[in-house]
Image (spheres, rainbow, N blue to C red):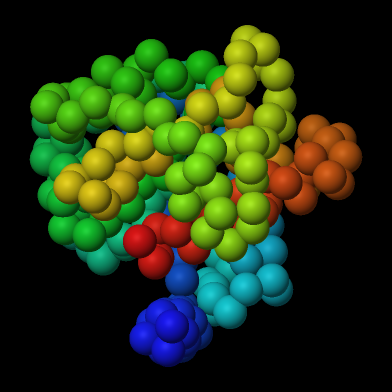
Length: 214
């Protein structure tokens, strides 16, 4: 019991000692990689106010071929349209994720087919695995006994959290039919009620907290 407490305290101390940031991927192919511009700053602000994690409140934007792309261990990708990675971007993303990087891809409705195609190029021998509601992702900080919150209807399907694993480590999380990014946006953008937006923000905290402590 004492060992577990010391482990938790060490994690919290480590999270306070460094500044957390999110790097949004600027990809090619015609998709609006820049969508939901207020989402990441709002999530970082909520994270900063409600957890022990110190954050850089400004969104970082990168291309996977940037020289310092591998210096950003937490990547975020979203959009409505087509994603198309160059061969160099495929290699770069694979390298980042295989070297302790983490990618959260959030379907903003419309990127699903191209995202699945491109990720198969990055990891041809890995398949997206649905996470059960009992997975620690849904209980890492806040409790989500029913899995991902549903922010916007899209095709009316239940939201799914899908993951790529390297051993026991999740290297990629794909949130589908949920639209967390819209829930993180300013209230004036989509007029979503606060309970919906707060659920999205809390789930965002869970994803970050899980990625940092898995």
